[in-house]
Image (tube, rainbow, N blue to C red; front, top):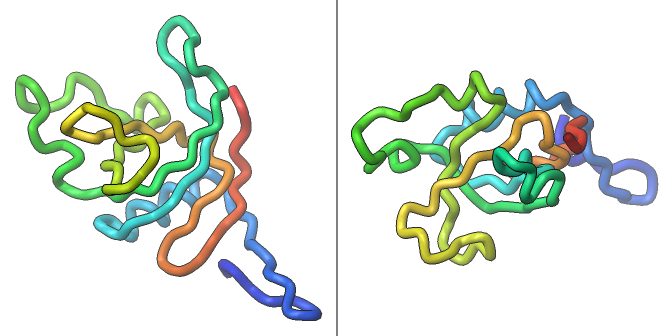
Length: 124
Protein backbone atom coordinates (compact mmCIF):
# COMPACT_ATOMS: atom_id res chain seq x y z
CA UNK A 1 0.00 0.00 0.00
CA UNK A 2 1.09 3.65 -0.22
CA UNK A 3 3.23 5.00 -3.04
CA UNK A 4 4.16 2.33 -5.57
CA UNK A 5 5.90 2.48 -8.91
CA UNK A 6 4.12 1.01 -11.89
CA UNK A 7 5.25 0.50 -15.48
CA UNK A 8 7.83 3.06 -16.54
CA UNK A 9 8.48 4.09 -12.91
CA UNK A 10 5.22 6.07 -12.64
CA UNK A 11 4.17 6.80 -9.04
CA UNK A 12 0.83 5.28 -8.04
CA UNK A 13 -0.99 6.51 -4.92
CA UNK A 14 -3.06 3.95 -3.08
CA UNK A 15 -6.71 4.86 -2.50
CA UNK A 16 -8.06 4.61 1.04
CA UNK A 17 -11.25 5.60 2.85
CA UNK A 18 -11.55 8.50 5.27
CA UNK A 19 -11.88 5.97 8.12
CA UNK A 20 -8.58 4.35 7.08
CA UNK A 21 -6.96 7.81 6.89
CA UNK A 22 -8.02 8.62 10.47
CA UNK A 23 -6.74 5.23 11.64
CA UNK A 24 -3.34 5.97 10.06
CA UNK A 25 -3.23 9.45 11.65
CA UNK A 26 -3.92 8.08 15.15
CA UNK A 27 -1.62 5.07 14.67
CA UNK A 28 1.23 7.48 13.91
CA UNK A 29 0.45 9.96 16.73
CA UNK A 30 3.30 12.42 17.16
CA UNK A 31 4.49 11.92 13.57
CA UNK A 32 4.38 14.92 11.25
CA UNK A 33 1.94 14.42 8.39
CA UNK A 34 0.48 16.41 5.54
CA UNK A 35 -3.25 16.43 4.86
CA UNK A 36 -5.46 18.08 2.23
CA UNK A 37 -9.15 18.42 2.99
CA UNK A 38 -12.32 20.40 2.36
CA UNK A 39 -13.06 22.69 5.29
CA UNK A 40 -16.36 22.27 7.07
CA UNK A 41 -16.67 26.03 7.60
CA UNK A 42 -18.08 27.82 10.61
CA UNK A 43 -21.66 27.82 11.89
CA UNK A 44 -22.86 30.27 9.23
CA UNK A 45 -20.99 28.57 6.37
CA UNK A 46 -17.99 30.90 6.07
CA UNK A 47 -15.09 28.88 4.69
CA UNK A 48 -17.35 25.99 3.61
CA UNK A 49 -15.61 23.70 1.08
CA UNK A 50 -12.45 25.79 1.04
CA UNK A 51 -9.54 23.43 0.32
CA UNK A 52 -6.78 23.48 2.93
CA UNK A 53 -3.44 21.67 2.99
CA UNK A 54 -1.69 21.48 6.35
CA UNK A 55 1.54 20.09 7.74
CA UNK A 56 0.72 19.05 11.28
CA UNK A 57 0.89 16.37 13.95
CA UNK A 58 -1.11 14.92 16.81
CA UNK A 59 0.19 14.90 20.33
CA UNK A 60 -0.41 16.11 23.84
CA UNK A 61 0.17 19.75 22.81
CA UNK A 62 -3.05 19.61 20.79
CA UNK A 63 -5.08 19.51 24.03
CA UNK A 64 -2.61 21.33 26.28
CA UNK A 65 -3.63 24.78 27.45
CA UNK A 66 -7.34 24.58 26.69
CA UNK A 67 -9.15 27.39 28.51
CA UNK A 68 -11.04 25.92 31.45
CA UNK A 69 -9.37 22.49 31.25
CA UNK A 70 -11.00 19.80 29.16
CA UNK A 71 -12.69 20.53 25.83
CA UNK A 72 -16.43 21.22 25.82
CA UNK A 73 -17.04 18.58 23.13
CA UNK A 74 -15.57 15.42 21.65
CA UNK A 75 -14.15 16.22 18.18
CA UNK A 76 -14.84 12.67 16.92
CA UNK A 77 -18.58 13.19 17.55
CA UNK A 78 -18.43 16.15 15.15
CA UNK A 79 -16.37 14.39 12.46
CA UNK A 80 -13.18 16.26 13.37
CA UNK A 81 -9.58 15.47 14.31
CA UNK A 82 -7.63 18.08 16.27
CA UNK A 83 -4.07 18.69 15.06
CA UNK A 84 -1.19 21.03 15.84
CA UNK A 85 0.26 23.06 12.93
CA UNK A 86 4.00 22.72 12.42
CA UNK A 87 6.39 25.68 12.20
CA UNK A 88 6.61 26.98 8.65
CA UNK A 89 3.07 25.91 7.73
CA UNK A 90 1.38 28.64 5.67
CA UNK A 91 -1.80 28.30 7.77
CA UNK A 92 -0.09 29.42 10.99
CA UNK A 93 -1.28 32.82 12.11
CA UNK A 94 -0.98 34.97 15.19
CA UNK A 95 -2.83 32.40 17.33
CA UNK A 96 -0.10 31.19 19.70
CA UNK A 97 -1.68 27.76 20.15
CA UNK A 98 -1.68 26.77 16.44
CA UNK A 99 -4.41 24.16 16.84
CA UNK A 100 -6.69 23.32 13.92
CA UNK A 101 -9.54 20.92 13.25
CA UNK A 102 -9.41 18.55 10.29
CA UNK A 103 -12.78 17.65 8.76
CA UNK A 104 -12.63 13.85 8.44
CA UNK A 105 -15.31 13.58 5.72
CA UNK A 106 -13.42 16.12 3.60
CA UNK A 107 -9.95 14.49 3.58
CA UNK A 108 -8.74 14.00 -0.02
CA UNK A 109 -5.00 13.37 0.46
CA UNK A 110 -2.79 12.13 3.29
CA UNK A 111 1.00 11.83 3.39
CA UNK A 112 2.26 10.06 6.50
CA UNK A 113 5.08 7.72 7.42
CA UNK A 114 6.78 8.09 4.03
CA UNK A 115 3.63 7.07 2.15
CA UNK A 116 1.09 9.15 0.26
CA UNK A 117 -2.57 8.22 -0.10
CA UNK A 118 -5.51 9.42 -2.15
CA UNK A 119 -8.52 9.55 0.19
CA UNK A 120 -12.20 9.29 -0.77
CA UNK A 121 -13.27 12.50 1.03
CA UNK A 122 -15.73 14.88 -0.60
CA UNK A 123 -16.91 18.50 -0.28
CA UNK A 124 -19.76 19.31 2.09
